[in-house]
Length: 270
Ligand SMILES: Nc1ncnc2c1ncn2[C@@H]1O[C@H](COP(=O)(O)OP(=O)(O)OP(=O)(O)O)[C@@H](O)[C@H]1O
Image (tube, rainbow, N blue to C red; front, side, top):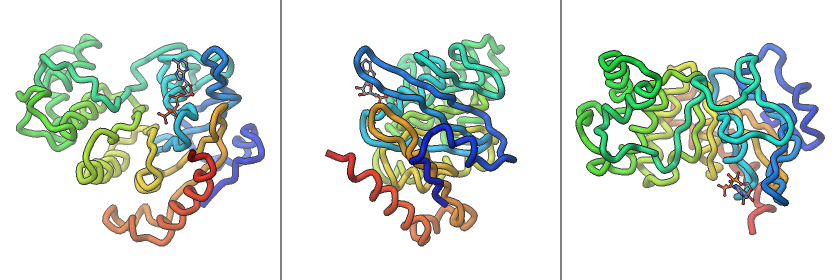
């Protein structure tokens, strides 16, 4: 299930399955920070309704790419197309989930989750109804009135996720959302993320450092090369997807893909 991308990025269009519905396209994107070449002529496509992970050595430009897709940073050249339209800045069709949760400390869970809708001018009762639904969906029912400092790191992360879900953006951008939580919480999150991808029909773009996590949660994994970053491989884990979340980690294909990715990334680890 591995598509070799080592030839050129521009071959990518040729290897996509033609019937695939693409929500987000990265087309020939380059980005420099002064003398630092972060991304170079990067092209990558994100199928609608699926989760794609960006995986690569530290500093290879994963966060830079996510910010460019989110419209928070402008590329030096190339373009991002979301649902057929070029990105010119942040927009309601894309929502971020940050690793540091980005919660308002003075607001309770309900207000924090509803905050994205509040910024969009949605009426109080409507935004609170919607927020309450997503608070329940992420497993936080009963904590609506709690404040961020009363919650564990994992619960705060769920608040951030509920907020991103409630604004109804079709594309969710997740920058290492599980890096600050303990291992058991992280595993529970990963399971929950699989259900969200299955039930929400949103396109998830997920930055992670963890090979195991990427293989566990992804429909597609883009392996990025060190700076200036390009896509080296696209991997589509498939055979274990329908076997149930609890069986994935012992599936032979899961184990093979984890090994294969490690074999290609280990050269870049100092
Ligand atoms: N604002 C900035 N100014 C200068 N250089 C930057 C800036 N932001 C990022 N960089 C550099 O650009 C490169 C890509 O950074 P980026 O954060 O996108 O990588 P990353 O793959 O997300 O890193 P990590 O895996 O360590 O989180 C790095 O070398 C980084 O030092």
